[in-house]
Length: 321
Image 1 (cartoon, rainbow, N blue to C red):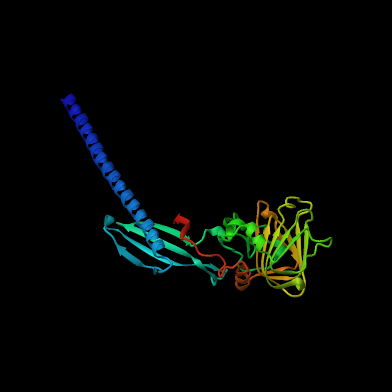
Image 2: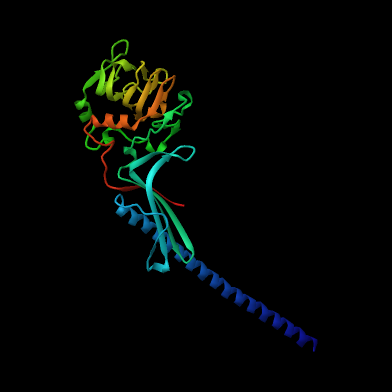
């Protein structure tokens, strides 16, 4: 009798264990199926968001999409929300200080059965390297980081790779030099060049210093200084000294590196290109103030009515958020 009772208890125990295992397997299969469905819905939501970016990019710049514009589509009973706006630069208080003419920001969200995916993209009618990005005033020159392009002492790393040959579409360095109003090679012993007016090109080949007085700078100037031949010497880096009471109005474009000093004021922009551009510094009491009008006028010396002619719209930054 005891043996039969023990056998019954063991049998019922095994039945209970296998029953629980069966329910567990069914539950696990259900969870896996639910997870697979959620992954499928999430992927559909992702493609919806990506499709929203593509849809917006096809209609820019003729149309900007307001925030909260939902579009019903047949895929997975999902929707996407797309908004776009002009790309802007804001100050530390959030105030807009510049709006790009040929650049847009797109925010898109795809939703399928409560699964949300979001994409943030920046579109531009130009490759990013074709934009002069020196916006704002450098207030403390000595503490500015070494950089190729400076915005309020902040290095804009993504704009490091560009050159005179690809910035102005349709014009290379040789063509620009042929258009110059004035060209100089290795200024005199004092390092002076005079005059500086319109499109001026200076090549430093053996000498490493250039002196500019704003009294000799007439009107709007696009000054191109090529220091590549004398760059790379840490004991004697190329130096550009700008002195005088009037301010320099226009763009100073440096090929290579240079230490820029002086007591004058530059209204416009300073752009630096080249492998050694991290060595370029602005120091002393020199004041650089971004001036869009000065830049536009300087670039117009090359025959352009805008800073850079618009090209095909491209996605220059894309990330899921």
